[in-house]
Amino acid sequence: MAFKRESDDKRDSLPYKLKKLFEVESNEVLCTDPYVPDAEFVSLEEAVQEADIVVLGAPHEMYRHLRISPDKVIVDVWNLWPHGVSFRLPRRLERKDNSCEY
Image (cartoon, rainbow, N blue to C red; front, side, top):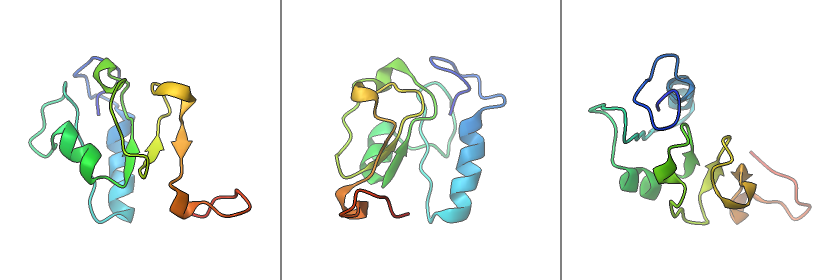
């Protein structure tokens, strides 16, 4: 949720704008950031466990070795996680012809 890595600066932070967009389309949006104090945030463990989609909003170093279940959709625009994972669809959303359905 911070504007940049290893920072508590949330001024002009794009993750907050994304959160507002997600809230329009989702039943629940869980947010976490070890550097930004916010009473509405949940723990990192809860966010990763409960989320269907994990969006990396700030590339904090502590997230680098985070274990995320393979059935989660992952959005990593920072390319922080191994193998350059930027978007991974769970098998249940993949088509036989390798195209994607949203």
